[in-house]
Length: 261
Image (cartoon, rainbow, N blue to C red; front, side, top):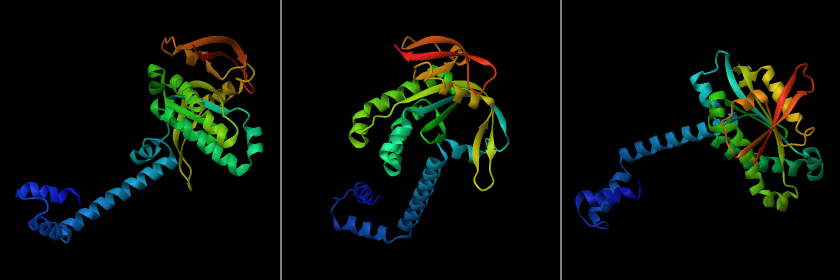
């Protein structure tokens, strides 16, 4: 506004930019109520935008909007995809780095993964230590295999920054993941601090699938029912493991190993 006003005045009056008439008009504008009211409006808009952005960053991508529109004021049932990821060897890394340096290590680790999550329509539900729980509405996650692409793009993002992690911390983080989908009840909960939470056996099952990765020597396992919803894509290789008894679950579940070709 400060730069363009004298240029606009010069064009409007058809006189040279540095003439006394332009600069007198410029000074009159700066001392006018129009100028001050414009500054107040701009400052108010900027303040509201910054507050919204900061709260949105703390609550999570898209969560604040759901609070504002009241999407989950009343609990509702949804079909959702969940991806549980867990960093490998995190305990030994934490012991060697110490609490403060490990905190910065985790922060850089999370920051490296967030672009891939946002790119494919995912939301971070929870950070639990070194674990990340990512979720999609079913239609969003299954479309063009968004949920699959998220996992492998997260892997690529970490590989691209491996030199940074090795030079800064002496460790290059890696992770494994488990994916499943099903029905959950979604709603707001809490009095002192409100959160949008998902409840249902699907979360427990997905965590158990992720926990089975080590046993089957793979970084990524999905349930067979999840696998049936994926679109054919030659970039992915699917290997059925068979029925597996998951820890803490009475019923067996057929699991599928997913790799890049």
